[in-house]
Length: 483
Image (tube, rainbow, N blue to C red):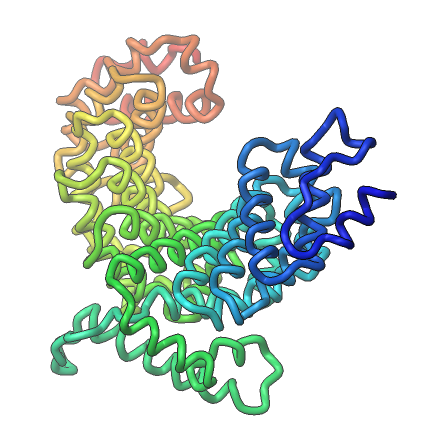
């Protein structure tokens, strides 16, 4: 009791004396003292307490759990709402960021009504605060599906896209309507989006009023952002792109929300114009959106129509990254994966997509070559309505020789190379290229144990051998071979 009274009697500052109950574990008493300061201290003491909690939380998971169990989340959220001090908001968001690496701890933050507070602060704060809050959003979305859904319900995607597109069109030349570039398309769509924001600000209870640019705070912070250093603007965009990536990951609804806010054009422009972490985060966001479109026909048809300007802009950038040998292989992998996810959206005449994928089959990086085989399989498999035309195009672009070489690679390369080869044989077995490349001999030399371990191969290889044996001589014995 004496120790508790010392906290109440403290004339400013943080009390770090140990109560008898915590003599063997000083961390608990420190956490109590910091939380007490968050509740009752002066602003500077509260900032110091939040920074100390952030430091403790960064050390280990036990400290994180103690802070949450002892009620540290609620006062941190209260401090985060304090618009009178950027330093206080940054300290609070940093502490919450360090706590948010576990689904249960994030649930505590959600239960304390943290999601609406975070969304509001993101839309109505200075740039330095927005960076830390966007990082918090990304981490919570990465570790908690529930947080991901709640953020979407609070409409956080719209302000993230708006911040990501800020300052994107400065000094852009005007383009004639008949020759619209990605720049002009993004600008037109974002201007329409801003108009809708202005309209939603009047008579609407939606949270978008908190970050509509028509509000006084929004205009004030916008003016501040215009004068911020380029490095700070870049950091904000990196954080917002990471948040969008985590929100879109494995989420069809969130991917649709991003496309509904015209985010695809913005992402395509940034992939084109930027480099480094920002380009990577934008590309990964696109990859997640295309994966969602692959699994959801409605999203695929609505977003990636062949005559859609955003879809064309995205595909153009994916092909550019994919074909650029100077790019980071990780970026190329993401671009190849995204193109593969869109395989069902391309008509047979769209050979500009298949050709660069075929070229990557012979890439020295086996992971990239294997990923190209995976992507091409989505063009060649029986689930694709245009599989026969796509298979003929793959063979026409000299895809068989590098594919046969891929069968001698590592396990992943061999597996996906075999699957693609089987589909080529099934849908284009008449091709002389398959005979010249010795595909039947390649099948004959397969390790039977490797085939047995993969169900898809056990089903495809007999079919492939049958189709090849129908059109080529001396394959009767191979056709009888059991797998």
